Image (tube, rainbow, N blue to C red; front, side, top):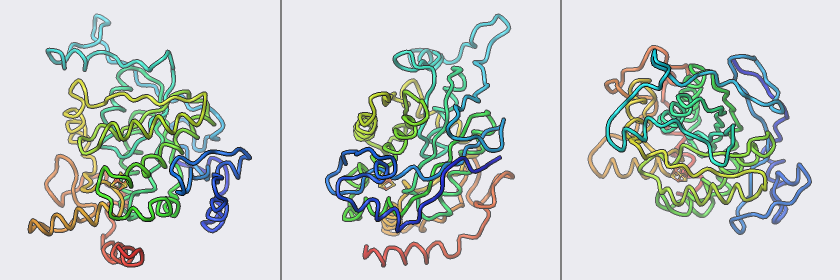
Length: 337
Ligand code: SF4
């Protein structure tokens, strides 16, 4: 179930004019407080434009209210003890319930996609942690890929009765911030800007909605530089004295392997590039140089043969990919990349 939570959506030109004031964040222009940009001349944090709040207990929850709909409990044996799983150090770590840092009792989880956040979400559900998923990823291109990734995440959230915040897809701001960084390699400066943007918005939401701590699923992927991600997370949190970033290592204790297990069990959509149009371009270049086919959006699902889709695949996933290629190459030509 889905509903408008609050706010209106300023037009792109409005956003650009607000952001055009040197050193003034569009957020601060809207809220009247200056925010120092962290990347020189790049556009600072995106404004709080809109959010959908999904909850199994309400069709439209005002975003000003708190969201505490996690109901899953840690599984118990008949003796009332948590079930023993695994062996050795990794097994022990895996079995230990997760605890939020510094006595916090509520968390905002920035999710980049369902496969990456599957393990963090499952671990927190198993540990009885009260958390909300925040989906803010305007980097993902094209829109069809964005919709598929988001729908996958919503499906998992609904299954576990977890509140899901569907934040704005303000891709105009993302492209503005990444100007001049189009040819950066993955894990380079463009990725720092990309993480900064997503975490700045997450930190702002946390600040405005009473979350004292936030974290992200981004670091679970071995393709990512965890230090780079954590640096961006801490920098975003430093904007607000009442918010901290939790740099928990989701890979440890067998987290990376469980991420794949969960993705297969859930038949999550298997994306084949990081997310932005530049990563899609570079992944395709690499594949072509290896004599492989170009990426076909909406084709692969974990645990299923190529082209086979699970029954629950959403409309976004079933739609034809025709036009994706034209839209992507048109964009790359416009951007001269
Ligand atoms: S490669 Fe990934 S992290 Fe880097 S800018 Fe693109 S979407 Fe963002």
